Length: 112
Ligand code: HEC
View: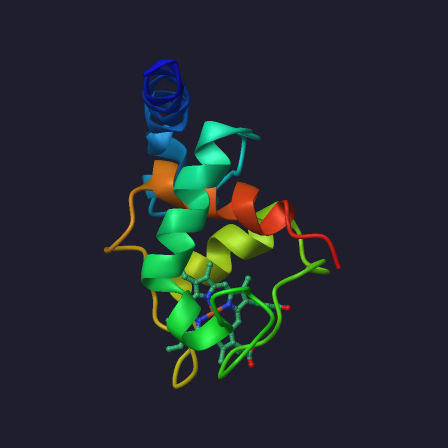
């Protein structure tokens, strides 16, 4: 039960700054580095939304291996939000900014 409370508490934080990620300027910021419970949620989000292209272990399938990414947090946020035409789904309208933050944290936890 304590774990659940922690997950809700941490998950609530990025949402409080959601305005940044929703700005139409495209100047989105990844400002939160959650740990623990949020990584579990990030992994669940990954399995649901990303695994069918990147593999359940994120080692790559149709999409590339996502371990040890060479792009900035900001770059990951932009890629998730915008996708890539003909290659990757855009998730801006499908995932909440707090969920995108948790996905970034999860991807950052994957060591090469
Ligand atoms: C429809 C298949 C598909 C889905 C779904 C998908 N991706 Fe991708 N993704 C790709 C492909 C293909 C690329 C490589 C595109 C390119 O040529 O840059 C990619 C690239 C990326 C990159 C950039 C990798 C790099 O080294 O620059 C990241 C980060 C990424 N995906 C994360 C995600 C996340 C997180 C999700 C789930 C929210 C997701 N992707 C869902 C197919 C997908």
